[in-house]
Length: 120
Image 1 (cartoon, rainbow, N blue to C red):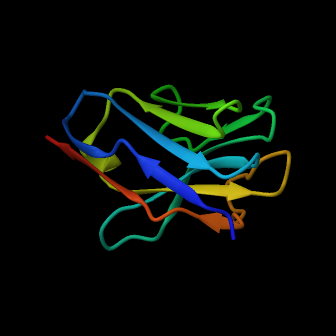
Image 2: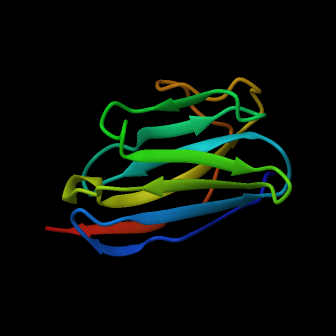
């Protein structure tokens, strides 16, 4: 079982920024999903094993940036220009596929989630 530890959630006003972090216990393709109240979990972004490939949901393109620090087994999600519709629980994931996880694919392992709330 892969161990994932998320941090960085919180409350921010619309237009503000937050950075999420996720630490893994090894090298994996990683990324984030999110789940708003009453809605299904949805893909946000992913990054491949060596960071060469990234994928983003259309709703976050141009506002969110995923990056990784392999020396620390960390992945980061920089979220800018946040909107109230970005509110939800953000789940880090890890996956054994080196090329990363695309929208529509289900990752292997999940973190516990961290709450992000964007007020109007």
